[in-house]
Length: 202
Image 1 (tube, rainbow, N blue to C red):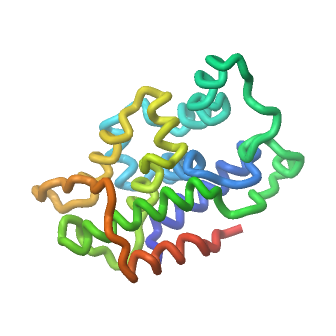
Image 2: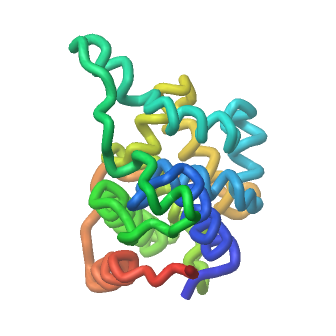
C-alpha cells in the first residue's frame, strides 16, 4: 500500500523522534523524517526553500520555537515534561512507546480527505501506492505542529504545500488549489483507518 518514499520517511521519523527523546511522535518528527529521507518531492521543496533543512527543523523542535514566544509573553517557560521531552528510555535508544499524537492523526485525516478529493476529480494523479507526498500534505495542515514550526522559522507553509503539489502533478499540468475542506467518502474513511493503525518498523 505504501511506496518506498513513504516507508523511508516513516522509518526516519521514528529515528528522529527517538533521537530527540520523544515518547510519542508528532508532525514535527514526520517533517524531520521527510527531510532526512530526502526523496524527489522533498528535493523539489528544498530547492524552493533552502532554509528548510533537517538541522534547522531539529533545532526548532529542541527550542520549541513555535511555543516559546507565546509562553514568554505570558511570563512562562516550557514545562519540564511534555510529549516531546527526553525520557529515561531515550538515553538507551528506546523507540517511542505510542505510535503518534492526536494532532498528527487529525492532520493526516484532513490531508488524506483533501488529497482523495483532488484525485477523484482528476486534479492529482491516481498513484497505485501512497507516497511521501501525503505525509508532506499532512504536516502542512492547519492543525499540525509542523506547520506552526515552519511559521516560526519564517518559512511559508502554503508555499511549501504548493511546492509539494507541483512536484506530484505531471509536468505542464496546472497545480491544483488545495481545498479548505473536502467531503469524506468510504475510500477516505478507509485511508483514515489505515493511518490510525500504522505498524511502523521497529
